[in-house]
Image (tube, rainbow, N blue to C red; front, side, top):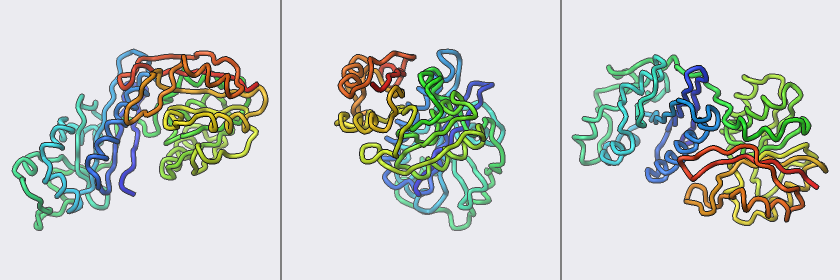
Length: 331
C-alpha cells in the first residue's frame, strides 16, 4: 500500500484537514495530481457541510522517512517546495497541538515505525541537487526536531460532507446501496439521515477506503448496519432490492451511463429512489472526466425509466463550477 488518506474534522471550529500518509511516493507526478484532486474535493465537502460560512480546509503529506522517499524529495526540491509551501513546523503542530491548519499545504516526515513526526527542513532539499540517502549518522525515528504524534486537534472520522445533498433519502426506506462510497464522507450523512434502522451496503474498488468507512460508521452510528463490498459499479452491483441508491461523485467516471443506470434501476424496488450528487458542468477535466449537469441528468434519468429528477441542493465548487444533489424515483 503506497498511501492512505485520513480526514481530521472539527465541526465546532469548522476545520477539515486531509492527511495523506505516504509509505512510498512512487510516481511523483501521479501522486501530486491525486493530491490536487483530493484537496479540491475536500474543499467542496467543507462547503457542503458548512455552507458558505467561515471554515478552514487544509492538506498535508506525512511521508515515511525511507531512504527512497528522502532521496526523491532531495532530487526534486523545487517541485516539492512549490506544492508544499506551508510551514512544516506549523503543520506538525496541527497534529500534535490541534492548532489551526496553515493556509497552504505542507509536508512533514514520519519515522519508519510511524510513532514520530518532524518538520521537513527545506535546507536539506535546497542544498541538494543530486540523489542522496539519509544521513547515516541520524536515526529518523529520533530526529531532534521531531514530535510525538500522539494527538490531533480535529475529531477523526469526519464531517457529514453530504448534508443537504442526500436529503432525498429521507422517508424512502432503510436499505440503501452507495456506489463509489470511498472512505465514507457521504455514508456518514446517509447513516445520520436513516437513523438506527439504517442498513447500508457500500461499494467501492478501494478495500482500504472501505475499511476506514466501516470504522467511521461504527464509531459515529453504531446502530447502523453497514456492509462493505469491493467491486466496480460499472461491472456488477450487489443484489437488491434496495429502497434507494446513492451515487455521490461516482458516476462522472463512467462514459457510457446507460448500462449502469439500467443496473441501478434493476436493483431498486419500484418507487425506490436514486440520489445523485454530481458536478453541474457540461465539460470535465482529467479528475472529473464525465460530469453530469443537472440539465442533462433529467433526460438520462427519464431514459432509464426514472421519474423527473428533483433538485435538492446546489453549492458553488472551486473545483468545477458547482455541485448539486438531486433525487428521482424508479417508475
